[in-house]
Image (cartoon, rainbow, N blue to C red; front, top):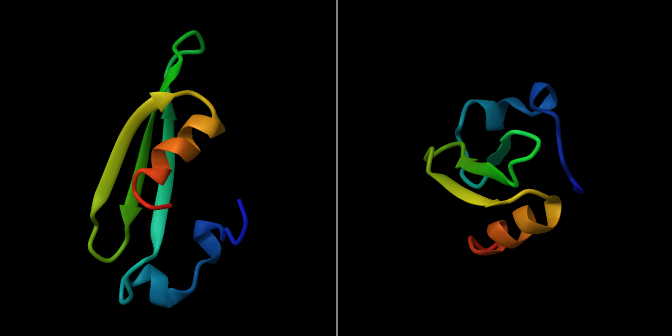
Length: 70
Protein backbone atom coordinates (compact mmCIF):
# COMPACT_ATOMS: atom_id res chain seq x y z
CA UNK A 1 0.00 0.00 0.00
CA UNK A 2 1.20 3.50 -0.81
CA UNK A 3 1.06 6.49 1.52
CA UNK A 4 0.75 4.39 4.67
CA UNK A 5 1.90 5.79 8.02
CA UNK A 6 2.54 3.67 11.08
CA UNK A 7 0.11 4.39 13.93
CA UNK A 8 2.95 5.44 16.21
CA UNK A 9 4.09 8.04 13.64
CA UNK A 10 0.76 9.61 12.73
CA UNK A 11 0.32 13.37 13.29
CA UNK A 12 -1.46 14.70 16.38
CA UNK A 13 -4.37 16.15 14.38
CA UNK A 14 -5.22 12.60 13.29
CA UNK A 15 -4.70 11.17 16.73
CA UNK A 16 -7.06 13.70 18.37
CA UNK A 17 -9.80 12.97 15.80
CA UNK A 18 -10.27 16.62 14.78
CA UNK A 19 -10.56 15.81 11.05
CA UNK A 20 -12.66 13.33 9.13
CA UNK A 21 -11.48 10.86 6.49
CA UNK A 22 -8.65 9.26 8.40
CA UNK A 23 -9.12 5.50 8.54
CA UNK A 24 -7.71 2.48 10.30
CA UNK A 25 -7.81 -0.94 8.68
CA UNK A 26 -7.31 -4.22 10.46
CA UNK A 27 -7.64 -7.89 9.59
CA UNK A 28 -8.36 -10.91 11.73
CA UNK A 29 -7.38 -14.24 10.23
CA UNK A 30 -8.97 -17.58 11.08
CA UNK A 31 -7.23 -20.91 11.38
CA UNK A 32 -4.67 -21.76 8.73
CA UNK A 33 -7.06 -24.16 7.00
CA UNK A 34 -9.96 -21.67 7.24
CA UNK A 35 -10.16 -19.53 4.10
CA UNK A 36 -12.01 -16.60 5.69
CA UNK A 37 -10.94 -13.43 7.45
CA UNK A 38 -12.62 -10.43 9.02
CA UNK A 39 -11.71 -7.01 7.66
CA UNK A 40 -12.54 -3.92 9.72
CA UNK A 41 -12.35 -0.35 8.50
CA UNK A 42 -12.84 2.48 11.00
CA UNK A 43 -13.15 6.21 10.31
CA UNK A 44 -11.39 7.81 13.27
CA UNK A 45 -13.51 10.93 13.88
CA UNK A 46 -17.02 9.52 13.45
CA UNK A 47 -15.94 6.03 14.53
CA UNK A 48 -18.08 4.66 11.74
CA UNK A 49 -17.02 1.11 11.06
CA UNK A 50 -17.40 -1.40 8.28
CA UNK A 51 -16.78 -5.12 8.47
CA UNK A 52 -16.63 -7.62 5.65
CA UNK A 53 -16.07 -11.34 5.80
CA UNK A 54 -14.24 -12.44 2.70
CA UNK A 55 -11.94 -15.07 1.34
CA UNK A 56 -8.39 -14.84 2.59
CA UNK A 57 -5.93 -12.92 0.42
CA UNK A 58 -5.11 -9.37 -0.56
CA UNK A 59 -7.07 -9.70 -3.81
CA UNK A 60 -10.29 -10.43 -1.89
CA UNK A 61 -9.68 -7.71 0.70
CA UNK A 62 -9.19 -5.22 -2.13
CA UNK A 63 -12.46 -6.36 -3.76
CA UNK A 64 -14.32 -6.02 -0.44
CA UNK A 65 -13.00 -2.48 0.13
CA UNK A 66 -14.08 -1.47 -3.37
CA UNK A 67 -17.69 -1.93 -2.17
CA UNK A 68 -17.13 1.10 0.06
CA UNK A 69 -15.57 3.22 -2.67
CA UNK A 70 -11.91 2.53 -1.92
